[in-house]
Image (cartoon, rainbow, N blue to C red; front, top):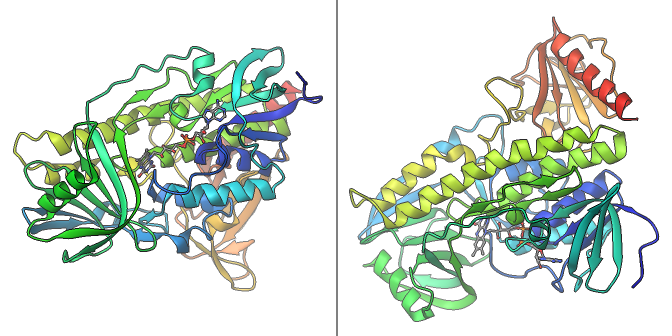
Length: 492
Ligand SMILES: Cc1cc2nc3c(=O)[nH]c(=O)nc-3n(C[C@H](O)[C@H](O)[C@H](O)COP(=O)(O)OP(=O)(O)OC[C@H]3O[C@@H](n4cnc5c(N)ncnc54)[C@H](O)[C@@H]3O)c2cc1C
């Protein structure tokens, strides 16, 4: 058995999309990250099929969106069909979104997301160690000690369990994960199809007897179908028969199958998302639920954004470890809500008092849109603090147009000053200032669309508002900055 000579900052267990993003964000903070996965490479087909609006916004901050966007399909409508007839089409919850420029799902397979993140992590000098499992993990003084399947022992300050629904990390620490099984089984088919159905790129929920078929547009020439089978043994022909029954009198045949699988709905949220400020669970290791609403991958990516700046600030900028506890405080309630939303959706496909499953389904989507788009998630009560920072257009001194999200930097808090004067505030080194004026030549950027005139905002690296004040009275922001500086001094 050989021990690693030096302790690293973070061991990421699992290189699914969530682990890959954790590793990438950790590297952006300059942390020494080791990411391992028992598989020999990223997945190449199947699984998650959509990035919601918030995921797209956050991926933009770390330069991972521009490459993904052209590969996917933009979708912001859902329609209901019943017995071969068009019933309704809706997109109100996307159109109503404020402060964002991606008012849609980007339909794109998980394989594309993993391939991009895998490459970026390698480019930043921490390629995934493949064919390597973590077989044991424990906490020790000052950090964690993990054993790999190669026999190596890795000493790290932090361990992130991004190791999926059967998480070894969660099990190793005995974190309860009681699973509800509503006995609902989906067949999932990604295929190139031929059909006389009037196909448009939108999510379609079909009502036949119940609502057991959904059609999801995907990238390239493939389409995805979710077919509720309610049994575990079924054939592709049986699945096709159900699709054809749902869209009757239209017909559909399959030219090429890319992926054919099944998904048994299980629902759970881990009792703890963190342990001793050293061990963290993220993604499916922390929460699992039905695929309805497309929230699994998206919730996991948001976990990574929430967690990694806190780890980065503790390891790199000397913030106290207490800040790490806000990860569980903020993300566990989100996970519980996601389980509720997807649970209501999946049950609506099977049960409806009025026999209008498909219509009921879309109404639930509308009610739960804040979670499905990702844009309604906030930390804490009413008011600007804890809400997501709105995106808007800005111009620089050369009159080049961009958006404020494209100039945010995940490595820093950003103090955004909207108005003529820069207030005199004491700034810790991990805070950058962006001055946004209201006319050409004023500030670092200027904007006429800005919703924050004459305000001062302290925005976290994950672009949630940490503190807010008017420009005339900056005391609340000054106090927050002072508290951050004092906490950092005390932790030294
Ligand atoms: C059919 C289907 C459809 C889905 N559709 C959607 C959708 O539309 N939208 C959506 O948002 N989500 C969807 N999901 C869910 C989505 O795929 C998951 O939420 C997502 O993969 C979770 O990512 P993760 O990184 O947390 O875990 P995973 O992707 O499960 O990755 C975990 C990784 O950890 C590795 N690992 C496990 N144990 C160890 C160990 N001991 N040592 C080292 N490595 C280990 C595994 O090899 C794996 O690579 C779908 C899932 C399925 C199955």
